[in-house]
Length: 592
Image 1 (spheres, rainbow, N blue to C red):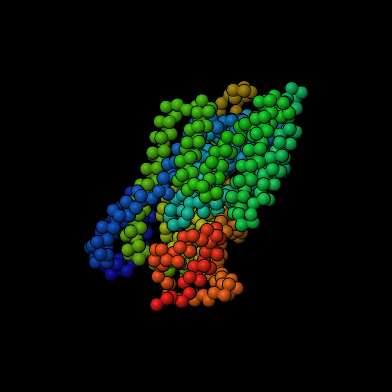
Image 2: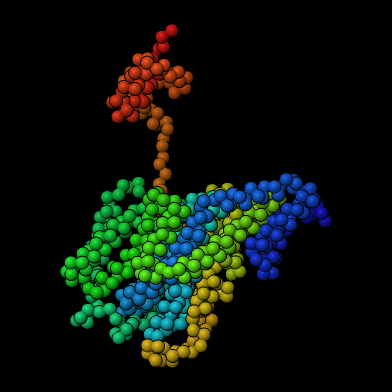
């Protein structure tokens, strides 16, 4: 019996962890309890050294010294301040008025605002609750199907998990040992492709079942010109000028520039020009822009500026993700102050929620570290590696099995728990199979989005349920009696978007350039070719170079060589010339 336990300690340990979680115990304490218990059992059985647990304090202090994890409280605080500053209300009202005249317009508005909130807040709960409070009553008022409205709001809120600055990407980067900036760059394009797929779903519904997503009635369109027109012509012209300026600037960038960097900087140029034109129109009272054009410009520019402040500085290499998060937190405070929403109560609520979430994440990380210490000591990593590398299909078979495992576990675990339990086990195997870990992290991040949308345990569905009407009610605007939103309707509305997310996982696997194309292009240096060119230049100057020759001793102060070195202004101006002169001095015969 003892021999069986000793030879199968790793699978027994993993199975015990699953059992603890199924009993409903806290994830952080389940991980820590399993790690400590099996570590002590292994020491008692003589399988593990007695000094094993002495490494645990060092690991915990390593977590406390990890600067990357500071980005979590910064981005969380930024999102919570923005959520309470009224930014979501202004965005939803403005974009809803912009797209309202077309069928599915409110759905488009919710998806686009969800993407913008994801790029500024990075917090799913804030996005879903804000859009549920603001958009759901309007969508129900004007005849949207309850399943469609619920699904669009919940799915748009989960974009915060794949569009930077996402908290899950920070955790995945830490667990996979990759750069947070690289995962942000890799997830940038897939995040907006997923946004386009959501918009495509709403568009398809508007063509096939237009009664499910009706347009806003005439009386609901409040931003209009004096002659009754929507004022879209000047908005379209302004957008065209800004787009042309951004594209023109992007064409001037070097071919080696990373895709994400080109997109962000070009967008910044286009948006800056649009804002400058709108500001000049208002200050000089030119009346060249419509009310809609001015409203859209002045409502969209501040969050876009904050996006550039955070993501632009990270992508351009100006700031680390932690520094970008700090600047984003300051920018959120400035935006709240400019809207006259900054108060001591808001700060207290935001800091309290930030402290809770950050403590939650770090406690899980401490528990995961404890479990990992004992699991690796009993060769758990070898057991998982043999289990997964033996799968048929090589890399593709591994990816299919891991993604199915994450999809199934997402029914019961949220993304933090998946990141701390599953990723440390499968990450080393992916690296051994030759899979790019940055790309692998983005694939897992897209898959983990489903943990928010899975009926019946999806957190986004719970957030929406908390703000959706539970009883029939009288609408305050129309006075009509409207039916409640049932939990079943929320669940059924989420299913099409879960399917879209699964399709997106397949798309990222099939087209890895969506991720790797946004990363910095590595500079390839052919050392042999470079040395041959250097030798050719030296031959032209009749200098014989021996790369393996012993370097000469430095010239004594006051010698001719030292004087030549200190006084060669031209050599300092031309590095190649300085290198050639140095080689000449080294290869010259020395006087006895």
